[in-house]
Length: 419
Image 1 (cartoon, rainbow, N blue to C red):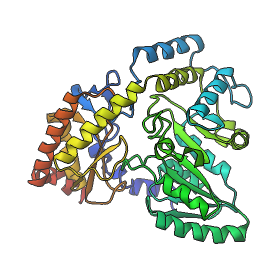
Image 2: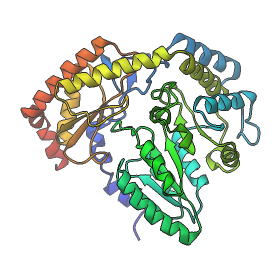
Image 3: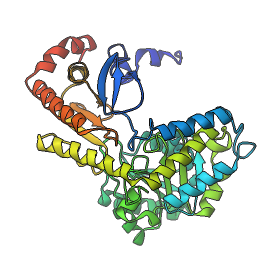
């Protein structure tokens, strides 16, 4: 028998093996200063494209005022205890009601965290006899939620309705044998590629198959649709989404999340969501802050308008300069380049040190080997000057990648890692 920790020490994982070269700079970097379009990284001013503050709410004086007053009145503890026991308040109920109305659902229930809550919702919705069918590119929180499922699950090819239909046929046959039901899971917006989920096509398959649809709309909530109610509103199928989930960590620039559905479903989840039944209630600081943020989403459409002005300027500028941004249909702006992990490190260091551009770098195993994904998140706080400087910087780094500069710079790193 081996020591449990032997494997951990010997194999640190595909990302962990780069820790000595990457930590503190490429991963776990420290951005400092007020959350905005420009912050400080290692003492230098950088244009930040890695903050999910889509509507620019995080540092607005009126937001900070509400947050500060709530903290002064309640501290970080109140209400103390789980919602079912001692952590329930009128304001929790008010926020739930307003969220449900905003996303056009009968009822909603607050979740302390998106990741934790989404896992628990999946766990609560299905039994061992049920079958889950989900998009292969779903977020890690969905993957982990599916892992909790004791029954069968199938993946369908990303945004592929034919693949979904074939897997629904398999699931239907199995469900008829087990006596269970079918849960289909997709995302409103896939956070890496920026593509909207094929919600309209999924809903159309309800005419042929019997299933319920769960949608994680973390990146769509507040950014898509006429009112900002998300990808379902954008595609005209919000009513056909059976269970809708969104987080406060993106457009709302805060902590927390919610699930919305028919009243009967929410009533069931209230009494069966283990992550909420056995966890402390969402603190009042975040509840009051979320009420203010939701009010601004409803009453200040100019925030979303400014966001999309910046999104269109950035994405159109990248395409005009010949960059591959995939098939994004959201604010998420991926830029695909060809290169190794060491080249990606050299490229990103050049962007940050010499051009003052800070964006996220995504490499294998999140995307296939040989690809580099630079992920940009435009916000309402960015300016046209930010965009022009970024476009110029990207043209420069692409040239250096293509002429082998980064390959030469990264040779020592690659050799040290045995690449």
